[in-house]
Image (cartoon, rainbow, N blue to C red; front, side, top):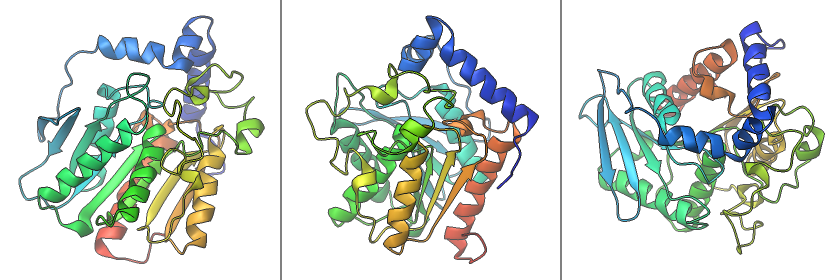
Length: 310
């Protein structure tokens, strides 16, 4: 782990803090309102020329499939973030394309799951389960199926893993989380310790982190809502990334500690000086680029069964 933050990394952190703490605009950014309005005005996403893009209509939601060819050599179920309020938008489509690149050409299935407040728990989990079952039905090799998610999508990724294990459904080969939101009870120590330094959610309780519309009348202690409360026996190898300055830091560290106690092979990586979902910077600054390179190494480690990564 780098011990110093790059100039571009520090600049990105400052820009995130500025955007999320400006009067009026900052409030809309923290609550997700600004991002949602911007996504409604997005231009049509430009798919890279070497990829095929397909929208798949399910009963209650949509999925988006990116493929390099028709060999079905492997696939990543991509579960986007957004606090369970935000829908799939172009920034996540860019992430999907980068998942394809760093994985060496695996197909990417992005699930545009139903979100709160119109569709509270368990809608998102139900849609994630249906997406995973669709993958199995397409005949992808089980040893080359991955689930990956950021923020709320990271929590949903882990909740999906718990559900699959509990219901006897074939587990994926590996799991990847970025800045996962795993504790909707907000009881982890970093919610207090990093409250004043988190550039995205810090200094305010009026943000997506403190909304309860996703679980509504359900119990946030439920592991399918707060995976930090879950048991991780039987889980595949995991890569868990998080930023040092996040209020959600303990969400990842606590899951890692529980999973290790259950014998799960995993790597947790706390990125020095980084903020929530810093990987959305793609390759624009060294820390984000390093995180994506690490994702590629992890996928190769799992697929090739090498012992030189974890």
